[in-house]
Structure formats: structure tokens, C-alpha cells
Amino acid sequence: MGETARPTIGDTSISAGNPWLFFAVTYAITWSFWLAAIALGVRFDSAAGLALLLVGLTGPGAAGVGFVYLVYDERGRADFWNRIRSVRRIGVAWFLVILLVPTVVTVVAGVVDVLFGGPGATLDEGVQEFGVTPLAILPALFFATLPPILEELGWRGYALDRLQMNWSALSASLILGVVWAVWHLPLFFVEGSFQAESVGFATTGFWLFMVGIVALSVTFTWVYNHTSRSILGIILLHGWVNFVSETVVVGDLFYYAHWVLLAVILTAVWGAKTLTSDEEVPRPPRPHDTRT
Image 1 (cartoon, rainbow, N blue to C red):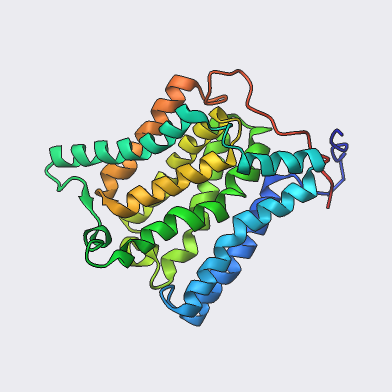
Image 2 (cartoon, helix red, strand yellow; image 1 turned 90 degrees about the vertical axis):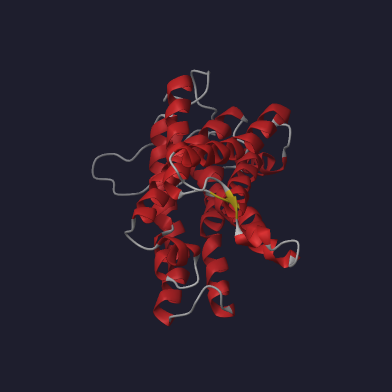
């Protein structure tokens, strides 16, 4: 069940399990639809724009499932679906960690904002209107459910394992974080998207957003490696991060700075190699690693 031989000198074949091939396919799927939205001049808050947004969001997950079936045998495929279904992998303690970490980061960032003379943490306008218009909560619920599922089947469900085969947990997190951050780039040019309307391209907010995603990637790996590679746990964490950020507003500088600070603390406490107390990173079943 081991991997096929590595290519020799002069062999230009590419391993199907190479994470960069997965990234290329993911970008091709997502960006083809999001760039189409830019070319057509449609807004993401229109029916056509929303359709292009949603189909583009399937890129990481669709590629992740596809590569799992391409690279792994039945044991590896079963492992993938088990990591989506199994609640035991998370456990009560880490479920509490998943709920507490985004909440604590947001609250502490809000307190620090107040200490520096800012407004601190405030409820989003949609939440404030919830009592009058219950549907106002729908955007927060949307970003807390569908995008994490569609993304994490690929980012952590497939790519992180492949990266950690050759890099430390920290290096794998940073690589994946940069890829994940840049993947959002077309959204900054589509009217009606959060990135275009609330952040803007090449602004201070843009760079904070990008750096913040890379920092989040480190925290996600920390949880992933502590929960026996639970995809379900990461979907819950990603969803809760989105929900908290959509409902509680904190200044970008303090919000993202605290995610960076958390990433530094986690690395200092648990070590860059695995981001856990273990010497070895949790490993997936060995792939067949077919060639294209």
C-alpha cells in the first residue's frame, strides 16, 4: 500500500498527491467563476453574482474530495469521511476550546481597543435589527455554515495533511495560510462582496485581512492536530470564527493583531514542529500517490 517510486532525474511526471497541484486545481475552479463575475460586472448581492459566488466557493471542497479519491485507497477515503462525521475525535474539552478561542480573542481585542480610546466590541447592525427583522441574522448564519463546509473539505481535509508530510506544522500552516489568503483575492474586485465593500484592495484593511488569515491558519492547525485531524472540528471552528466576526464588530487592527499574537503564543508553547505535545504530526493512511 506504499507510495510509488519517486521520479528519477529527467522524469517530469508530477505526483498527484503534490499539494501544489491541489492548489492549482482549487484556484482554477474558484477563480474561473469569480473572475467571470468581475468580467460580467455582476454584483454578489444579485442572483447571478450569488450563483457565481457559491459555485466558486465549492473549489477547495470539490478539489479536496477529488484528490482524496485520486490519491488514497479505500482506507484513506474511509478515514476522510470518518474525520467529517466523528464527534469523538473532538471531545468535550476541544469542543469548548473551539467555542472559547474566537470568543476570547474578540473580547480581548475589544477591551484593548477601549484602552486605546476606541469603541471596543459592538454588535453588528444586523444583530441590532434582529429583534425587529429576524432575517437580518441570515448573512451571519450563511457565513457560519456553508463557506466553512465547502472550504475545509479541501484546505484542512486534504491539503494540510499533504503539507505536513514534508514541512513542520508551523511551516505547513504558513504555506496554507498564504494560499488561503490569496485565494480570496478576486473578491476584492466584485461589488457587493464583503472584501470589496468593507475592506478594499491594497488598503490597510486588506493587508490586515491577509495577515489575519495566515495567523488563523496556525490556530486551525493547532486544533486540527489536537483533535486527531478532525475535519468536523475545523468546520465548527471556521464557522464559529465567521459567526463571531459577523455579529461582534472590533477594529481590524486589534482584531487581527490578536490572532497573530495567539499564533505566536501557540507556537511558543507547543512548538513549531507539530503544534502539539507530541513529537510526530498525526499521519493519514499512506497514499497510493498515483501519477499524472
